[in-house]
Image (cartoon, rainbow, N blue to C red):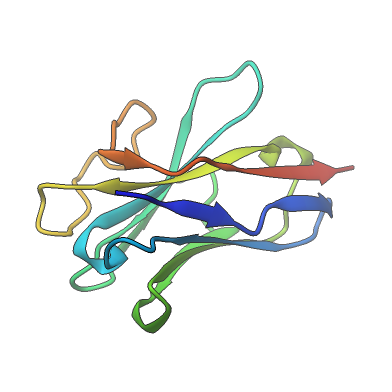
Length: 129
């Protein structure tokens, strides 16, 4: 299983970015797709999950209201829309796929310690003040 993230970069505080997560090997809607991030020297943080079959979404309280997750099955892509970015959002962002739940997000899928089954390589997001 291969996941590829894109869309990271350098943005000023208050700006927006949209990250993409896709696969050339499998339909992403067959899995629950999660987003995590990890800043230097910090623990990994779970951000959001989207269920493949019905598109139901979960967003961590820490980013709720600023981040949203969506999918486009025609493009086989899951997106993480990030608005009103802050310097503390600077991190490497990873998408990951969860297997074994029929494509639905497990209840603990955005817990920081959750371990999805397949990971992308990550994309750097840097927010300048």
